[in-house]
Length: 299
Image (cartoon, rainbow, N blue to C red; front, side, top):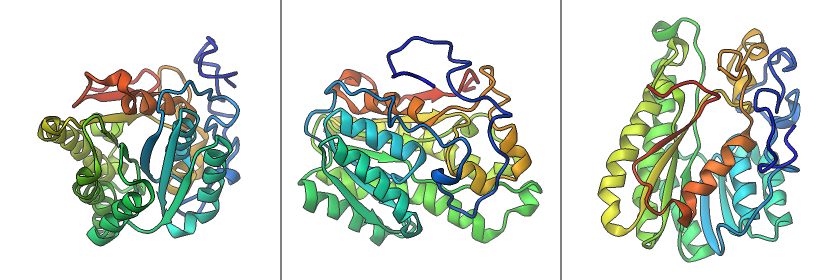
């Protein structure tokens, strides 16, 4: 395991490879504490350097996985964080809040389901009440459910849930958040390698991630005149609770083996990219999709 994000080492061996991941299944939405091995969110590996001083950030899906790693990194870089998550993820969210507060920053917990415009408006309004503004919006919340039968296995109810969670919520949150954002603010959307190389069993999820890539580009062109940058991070296979909660145990065993690095990524390996896109260091970067894929190409 990495000593910190600055220690140079062989990336192929930095984290567990397939075969050391315990085949397991969990009810959705899953929890990291039941995973073997537990994901690395940067608890003992992420070292801050003051790159987000006095930043006010909103992170959806902030209870675990990439959201938790991003919240931890933001806090250690100087940001206060509002975390959005499903009510059934309360225990994980409280653990994330502890990590933020241990870094000396404010953590605001807002449970709720973002599949309605009212919920998204309320979330942005809460950020306005707590912080007075939004400097960084991270649209990270997502729903996926693998279906081995592909198209024929996807119900209309699942299709609707995936699009409402992954695409509609992003649209509604951006609309609600932009009036609270100043020039120099940033929006970061989590897309996926699935937007470029979709898997049949994730047909609906992949379609939403492609929509997010397109929305990122069009939003960047729309909001640049307000001084707001919009970018996206496209993860490859990442070891998060979503994996055992949406995939059969035998696929969990080999998760990440298809990458050139031969392993799944860890949430802590995504966090520095979110920090970069949130910080002024990326002042000339907008409308971009940054792949963190273990060597798989975004094509």
